[in-house]
Image 1 (spheres, helix red, strand yellow):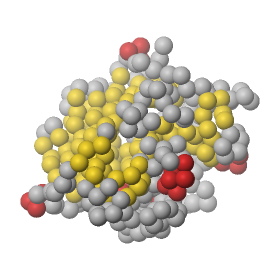
Image 2: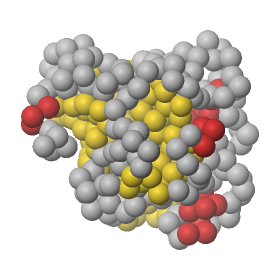
Image 3: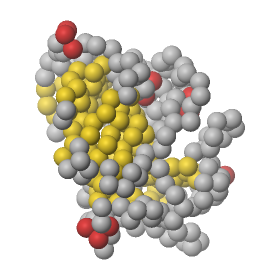
Length: 328
């Protein structure tokens, strides 16, 4: 999965992103991206049902300027965002990394915007990493091709986690890759289902909790899990309202693990902003929250000068759940 290249970008295309909302559409999907807000995908809708699969931002004040100590909860906290070079903040080899990384804080450059393709890029500030993504639609599928390149002269290490906050309603079903029967607990608010590092049965815990069925938005719960190394990169959410399944697929040679965030009104703590109601299925390079931990356990990726790493994630809306590979 490693490739090399100069990463030089034509001066004519070096246009800083604005607050513009850029649409990408075909006859099945409607997608919107906001370059100025971390290059995030703000909307993913089925055109046949009108169902919105992504959470929408409730932010009412501007985000803080990009900085090492910005809190993720001060940003949009909605749609599909990107975590690189870390998820959690803290000191690591190579210097401090911000909460949820650099790129949700940055305006991204629009490098190409045509009827069937959108290409954007941003340069990080905590590391010499240039991060690019190329969006295209193919029938019922949004394909996102990613590339991260080390533009500096010294080696850089990082972890990557996709951060899609999916909209849910009570009674929806979370679908994990075939064969997953246990998860490692990273966080549970008030230790509701166990302590960090506990092995938790999936989909039904030892105490009889059905983790795969979404609860009410005011339940006040929040949990974060990681899978072990995966054999198959596919997961999704079945939406009860329309019977559609949103499938997320990825290559496990590049993204061998999956993070799972289930929040039913339990985050952010001690905040005046509305509590989050979402599920995040997070294909990732590392089964841990911080770059320091990934470096310690050997799951962080390393790039030499001018070296790059590429991967792809696909988001497919399956109209009939019987055609989903996740329901059988």
